[in-house]
Length: 416
Image 1: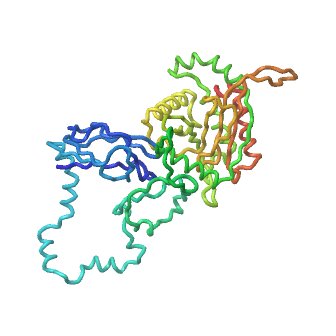
Image 2: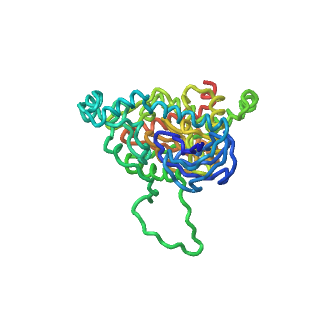
Image 3: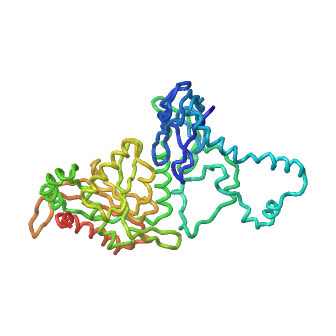
């Protein structure tokens, strides 16, 4: 019995995947639950395991981009595993084959008139005779983030697209105008962009074209945060098993400010604004595959201990390619920290459909004026990029100033 190894469906918006590597060789004997291959999608990297024990035949080599549902290998299954793997198919076939009496009746009917149910179906309006989505092939539509997402109540079906014939996924096009292939010169090499990088490229260009993005800046005296970490850090580590870091202070401050400035926690949907009564805050993590933004669900209700544990766990999963699609989707606000790479000042780009993003930067000792005196303080520039269609100058500047105030009274933020 041959068991097919297919590219699994890992998310509604993902229609293709690239085979990064095969963990087995053609003709190997594999066992059920063995890891067969590693897949890269535009959002996550996943592993595909075997559903049966037997000899594997690889049909698609590494570094190929294929559509979801494509058969990339077969396993000549044996024993109980083969029976279990084939059971769903056999059951489905049993349900599709009519009983002998029904077959005889159909033979006697020959080419006579159609049965009543079919006639009744023919009398239905055209819109009610549309094929069900479940029966249609998976089509390589663009990812959902590249097109506006209508609200659930405004969702519109696209029968003309659904009736289009299935086709092989097209090779990704370069951003901007197409360029003719040029032979490589000595010292040059060509490397295909990862699906994640391709997705980021499309999203970044879309942000510039589809939003009115503007950035406002401020600076934060980090003395209070540093003092608070020194005062409570050792006790925090003993009680929770994680260090008291910087990011948790910024997330807590953002969660407070988002309640006071709800437009920063909203997004535009056509001519409507979708507000959130919760804060699902994403934080940018740099990985060898590119930038990922894990989401802290209901961050506004988390303690500092919960924040630090979740930050550490999600960052590790992102770097180890173990993060799931669910852990990357649905954020309402994002924080990015270019300071870990030495950035002094930058303009962060919006993470659509969100309307605002906060950028952290390097901490530097600088001379500042305090009560008529010049003193040296650890200072950080912070930036807020926002969609000016939704937030005006007063709201954006007020939001960033509120974050500054909260961070400069870090002890109260930590205890509160």
